[in-house]
Length: 289
Image (tube, rainbow, N blue to C red; front, side, top):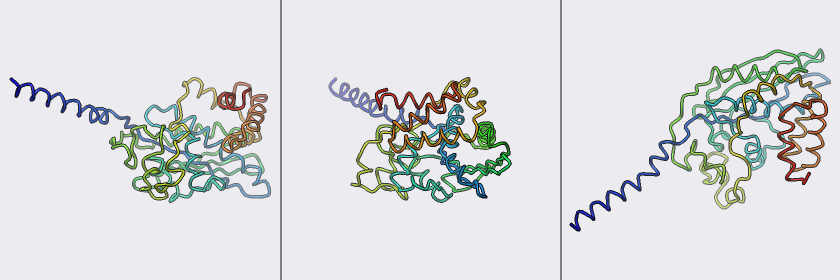
């Protein structure tokens, strides 16, 4: 009788120990995608007029891509945290090799990089490409032509073309702490690659960035489809897009009052531009307004 009870206890213990394995098997295996800031490739005397667009293009591309339920987008604030840790926030220039290195730290499967070029006649070209973090292969090169005063339409086209060519097959779930882990624990602590110092360019053990908890969101929260569609149809001109981009950069620098002022400027011209209101809501609690 005692032997039978002992055997039953062992079976219960084994079943209990197996629960984490079942949970791991059910982990979210959708590919993780990181979008980096876009380079200003414009030429001529007016080139500097478009330097401020890179952050806005990144933010709005993330907004559009996040509506795709087959992927997870790394939140822009999380990307900025990593750029700060890697001393890359000032330039924001991301070459393919750097994109792969940072992609591993962020545990992403794909990185999207690109650039834009505007001319004095008001025309614009936006390019984008996907980088497979595991193989470093560059795929899906895209080129969108349009008008600098309708940049959201160009972003929407680029988003559609990139995702249609991306391999969205589920990725195997890995143990927490592995490079590429899709378990979602990075929202409450530094990603495994960054905290262990095992990934190229990752924070070393004992460094401040390896021990402090992450404050940024890990993944971008998808918005309702109708909100995204309305946002991307806004006729946002280049000048307003530049103001929006500056507001995001002020947010990154923790200059919350200045960021709010700039976002209100955007709202005054485009009252229904949801991203401006969303960021104002984020700032409200921080600045007590």
